[in-house]
Each structure stands twice: as C-alpha cells, then as structure tokens.
Length: 186
Image 1 (tube, helix red, strand yellow):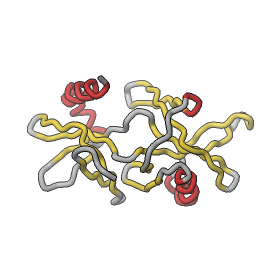
Image 2: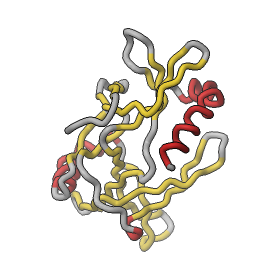
Image 3: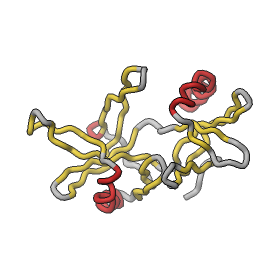
C-alpha cells in the first residue's frame, strides 16, 4: 500500500495501533495539535436484535468487544469476498481495500447523542451482512471521515485528547480545522 502524505501511529490503551494521515497540524498556545484521519476505513459491526415490545421489530445494537472474538473470523471472511481486509486496530476495527460505491439503499442514518449538544445524524454505508449461530449481523462504515485530534510532543508518541481536553481546546482549534475542512470540500 502506498501512503499519501505524512502519517502517525496512534496507540490505544490495549496497545493496538492505528495508522493515520495527518490532515492538519497547528500550534496553539505553544502546543502542537494535529487533526488525523485513519488510513484504512473504520468499521462497526452491529447485531440485529428484537425489541422487547414487538417481535416483528428489530433494532441494531453495537457488538460488544467480548462478543467480537466469536464473530470476527466470519466477519473477516465476509469482507474478504469484497476484497476488504478486516483488521483489529487501535480505537476501531478497520477495513483495508477499496470500498464499493455508496448506494442509497445501503445507507443507514443514526441519531447520535452529543454530550450537551443535543443529537446529530451520522450516515453509515452497509458493507456486508452475515449470520453467526442464527444471529444476523451487519458491517457498516461511516460515510463521513472519522477524524481524531491528537497532541504532538517531540520525543513522545502522539496522544489522543481526552473528551475533557478536547472540549477545553476545541474553541481555539475550531477555526483552523473548519478552514481546512472547508478547503478540502471545494
């Protein structure tokens, strides 16, 4: 795989790595921050479960890490049929390869609660569905890029900001990031 531009590696608390492109780095109050985007596509696996009040109605529930071990090989095989490689990476599962074109019928819109900001809609593209022990699962990837903000310090690995740190510095970073994202969309 040939990489496009500078990259950094994020490591989560379990020691798993996530390779990311550096979209933008800025210095604010003597500290360097970067906006990064995973090189591979983040994916989420959901289970279809019946709602308590209606056996005919089902809803998507995220698969817990403990259950992921049991279904991972099947999910890997299903994505391999589409020339995608499912990987256990830091911060998220990812899929390496070329995604299929987005078809309107394969888009899932979720209402996501934001802490103190109400809710926001996020769109996901369906990559595949599969069954494991009579349970139906669906693999989705976010349509919009997944971006992380990290602190960069010489001689230290990049550090993902905690939600509290991000909230405190966000007003100072936002103008830089919005300008960059706006330029990318043009």
